[in-house]
Amino acid sequence: QVQLVESGGGLVQAGGSLRLSCAASGRTFSNFVMAWFRQAPGKQREFVAVITSVGNTNYDDSVKGRFTISRDNAKNTVYLQMNSLKPEDTAVYYCAARTLTTTMYNYWGQGTQVTVSS
Image (cartoon, rainbow, N blue to C red; front, side, top):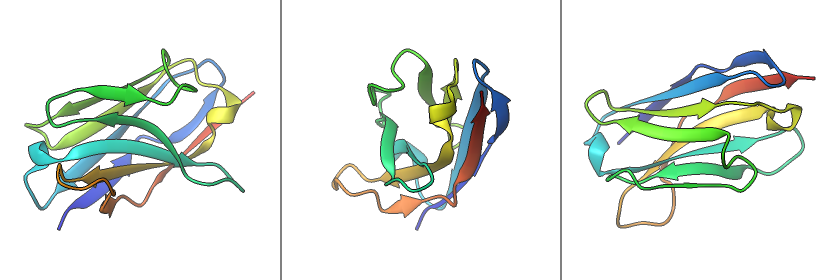
């Protein structure tokens, strides 16, 4: 079992920055693929960014060049640095984890709210 706890959300003006953190516990963190998803009010949850166990990354087009995902295996933590934030980035952001042998994200955090004011 893996427990994921997000932090770092809040209210920020458009153009500002936030860094989200996701602390993992319970199993060997370095073996997991880690990702961030988000869900805006009235919309489906959507993919934001992913980082593999060896540090390869991928991003949704809507955040490329503005967001950066990273991980610190020694601290069992994955980060999402969000710059140049836009009002449309407003959502609950979720951290998720999966093993290398699956395509489904088995583990999810409780989410952290990010609100970007115009």
